[in-house]
Amino acid sequence: MRPDNQIIGPVPDKGADVVPSPSLEKVREFIRASKADSTLRGYQSDWRNFLGWCQLHDICPLPAAPETVASYIAECAGHLKTGSIQRRLNAIAEAHKAMGLESPTSAGMVRNTLKGIKRTIGTAAIQKAPTLTDDIRAMVDATDAGLIGSRDRALVLLGFAGAFRRSELVGLNFGDCAFSKDGLTITLRRSKTDQEGTGRKIGIPYGTNPETCPVRVVQVWMEQASISTGPVFRSINRHGQVQPAGLSGIDVARIVKKLTERAGLDAAKYAGHSLRAGHATAASIAGASERSIMNQTGHRSVQMVRRYIRDGSLFRDNSGGKLGL
Picture 1 (cartoon, rainbow, N blue to C red):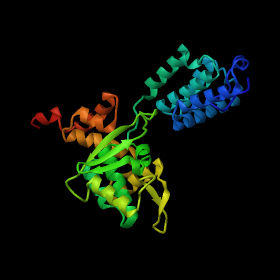
Picture 2: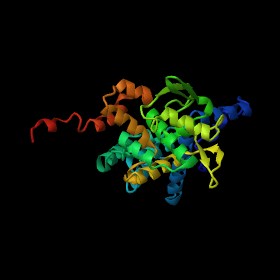
Picture 3: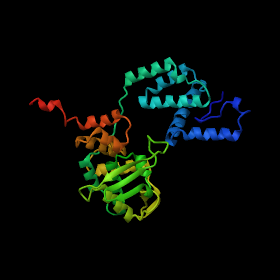
Picture 4: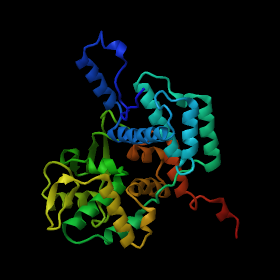
């Protein structure tokens, strides 16, 4: 069978006689919509890699034999982390499911090979450092003058106070923001854990210091940039003009790295996720409950939040400090 480089391939011929082709095209559209665009792009990239490996070794990729997949991931273990290997297995499984074929990834040989890889190279993920409250203050102090500084301060403070993901920050529109005497209410239309767009509201209370109050700083940015519709966070050209297009997730990471470096931190340890991780860690240090942290972050798993809480409690609740040394 000729390998196809798309995860969502043609449906089996046996249905062509009884289902009109327009209906089949609708099916394909809904299948594509069942997963986030970023997930599909990742699957397609991983699937192309598997196709190239199979072509190099003159092996049939679809359907792939368990021995083929096991050999492939064993070779991947020489240069990939276990999370990336698992993602490639997911892509292979999706390609087979899209063609109505049994996935070889569920075979015992593949599962045992993956288990051995995990035991050999480990499964610990490299996490970016969280930006804590003092770090955020230093980053705010390090911002530029003018519109760029106003935008960057608003981005960093709102990302930290709301525990937002990069995608959530850049996806914010003017209509998602409601200012009131209590603070700023953000309506998230869609997020990583809400792909169906149910939406949820997040409250951003006023801060005690006007210079680092996320509500006031965001309001100032929107007024200075004359934003009354469209994306909240936008690019600014070299002439200092605010553009209609919104920032990307990569732009958020660049801003965080730029400001952490200016604040005297090791920029290599920080990225866009540092704002979200920093909120959970700093809130834990300040004594916030797991429930209140999860309400803000939107985490569904207590285990995920506890990972940040443990980091924040390493020295605050440490038995080593009770030894009298």
